[in-house]
Image (tube, rainbow, N blue to C red):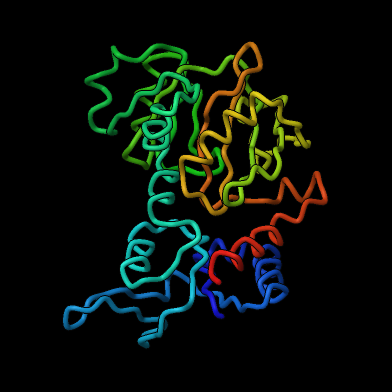
Length: 284
């Protein structure tokens, strides 16, 4: 069996070691992964049939696709021509939009911060609905780089004006700053959790210089997380939580193209091998 591993060129350059692990893990499980760049893929419809081109040539579809790029239109097209995608279009669409994530998980009773959605060109008209201080996020941002602590209305309007994104999430401030939890999920299994922390930034992202360590989930935490896992058809995701004043979990976001560098730094858990074993079972 042959699968495609989809990356943008820039992300592939930054994740070369991880790509090698994925390809090696696939071979160990009896299938092959081919790396394809999103920039070289053309999708279309010819004579009423959905088609695929790679590097200007029509290409036969693979047995499956591992999407490590964020492109809902590509995911949708792959599914329309009958390709099994890890993660699927529905999960990718939800997880890569912070407000939709909160919207979907609210009905499960998952604890979360008060959350407002705005467009860049309308937020000034509704500024009276916002309580300060607050946190402003790009709805489709990743890695904590487009997350801002806002003290007042003046800072809010200045940050919005200088931003290069259109969809904005506004939340009240978590009671514990600089601390969050990433829970790694493969299929219906809670694999492990990593606590991330920072003493100099309200964001706890490891990529922004924070620290990390393995975290043992309590039974109540496991039950909350399992409720989310059982409801959605995840393949491989990270569910991120913050903490309230009583150390109870509060939803932060779900990572579709979840990174594992932090996990490999703090443990010997081989999440790539677990993921490849899971894929092997799914595509039999």
